[in-house]
Length: 115
Image (cartoon, rainbow, N blue to C red; front, top):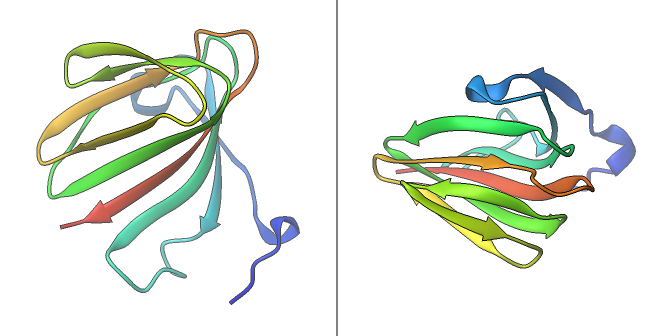
């Protein structure tokens, strides 16, 4: 299956998970298109000052892979700066949040895998 970027839609979510501003979510493949134990495969964009609020992952894990921009992640209580090439994995009851504290868009891949 080939899916062109022109076939992908961008969804704008305000105050995602209690965060600040808006989150741009572009599903690469939708939940209905995925056949395995994956419920989300998206490119996410956070404009400067925007964030995804703190949330927990039970019976699943979420992986972020930073493509461009800079941000700060609360990784289960540990505050860490992230930049392109960094990866974050949260699961098994752990929590995280992410914020763009830079001056350009923070763009990252997000994948949620089910246990």
